[in-house]
Image 1: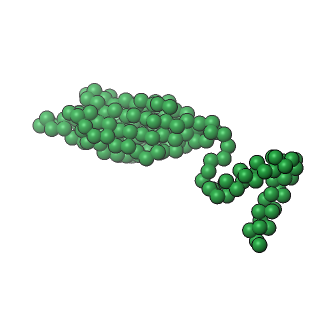
Image 2: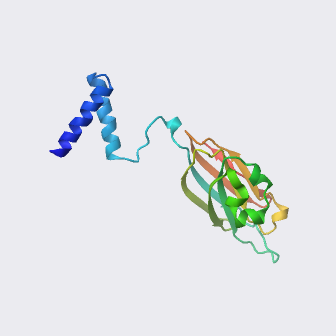
Length: 179
């Protein structure tokens, strides 16, 4: 009886909010019931929803050779940034030891992963924060001074579903953003 009374109150409220037209009342009740059944359901237009990114890391075979010529896995840091300036001017040691302090106010969040030569790793879908304007990447190569170990690409914080490929190659890393 209590849930019936609650449902009746919602229907009455919807009727009042939609100027009492039956079609709008039914539409409002339908939307509210969908939200009640699935509280995680996004509310609003897709363009207003946080962007989501599925990120694939791939290291070419033969990359990241040590002094003996053996290939080795690389550590990869993927960042959500409000600005890419600090990433592009930071030194690797500071960034790898304390990314948040090194990137300062441009830091939003990050994920870390290790990738082996010839292998790929997929990061679970990542919802972008409203402050995010760039996806940045830093890679811990053996010969850090001989490669482009960091890069960033502009993204929209809302309204997009990105597939982002981060190829790790012998001469450096890049970010390929696909909508």
